[in-house]
Amino acid sequence: MEKSNCVTGAERVPITPEICLKAFEKASNEEDRDGMERAIAMWMCNEDVVSTGVGGKQSINLEQRAKEIHSGLDEFSQSKRTTAVAIVKNADGTEQILVGSSVKRLSPAQRELLNSGEIEAIGEGHAEVTIINQAKANGQTVIDIAASRPICPNCANTINEVGANPVSPLKKVKR
Image 1 (cartoon, helix red, strand yellow):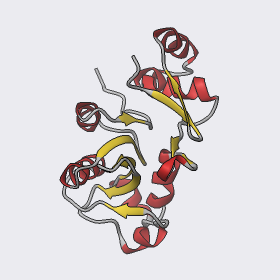
Image 2 (tube, one colour):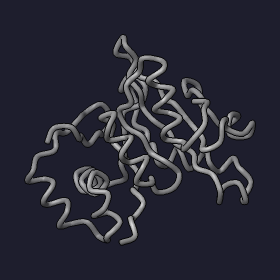
Image 3 (tube, rainbow, N blue to C red):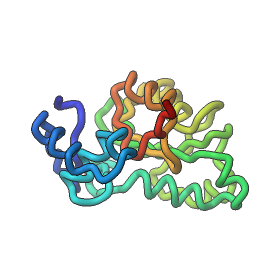
Image 4 (tube, rainbow, N blue to C red):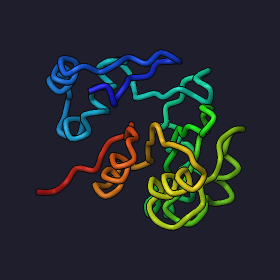
């Protein structure tokens, strides 16, 4: 089970089946159990899920960054939209950060919040899928992705299909 890794700084820690079992046992609630990758990373890092920054030089909490950029929206829009942030790998091995919205573009206020090196993903559909589609079109590979609200099952499936890691909570499926 080497697909998932906990990242602290530039160090990646492989996840073993034993670690998965311990993480599941330590998960504090059902939402964490539904989002096993998050629970595993939380247990291993003893903190929120983090990903390497561009070039592996810094750590970035993608979920926190998605929420920061999402906060650029007015209160009503925050309740209706989703913002996602992802680490993507370019064909030459370098990394970039893509930021997408559940509407075609980030708002002007959100674009003002982008840091140097953060690139707006433009497209239709859910924020996570917008990022994945732009990454594919640019020949990039999505490594880790997080959203400002729990990731819906359809987006979670798309994320898994491209081999990326969802590093924010997954939406609980009502049974």
